[in-house]
Image 1: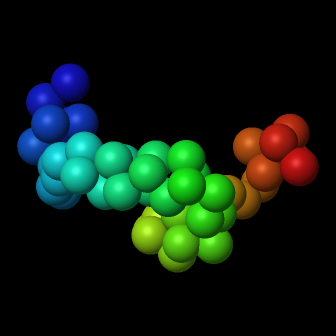
Image 2: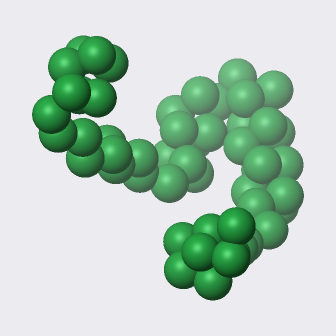
Amino acid sequence: MDRCVDTWITSIRDVTPLAHEVHAAVLAGDEGTARGLLPAERPYPLTGDPAGRIG
C-alpha cells in the first residue's frame, strides 16, 4: 500500500469543473465541443501474456 501512495500516485486533480463543462455541452447537443474538452487518452502499454488475453 505504501508503494501505491508514495510511488504510483503522481498527482491528483479535481476535474469537477471540466465534468460540468462536458455535461453542459452534451446536454446542449454539442458533442464535438464535449469531445474536444476531454483529455487525450493513451493506451496502457501491455506486453506478453496480459496483452494476448485482453486482445
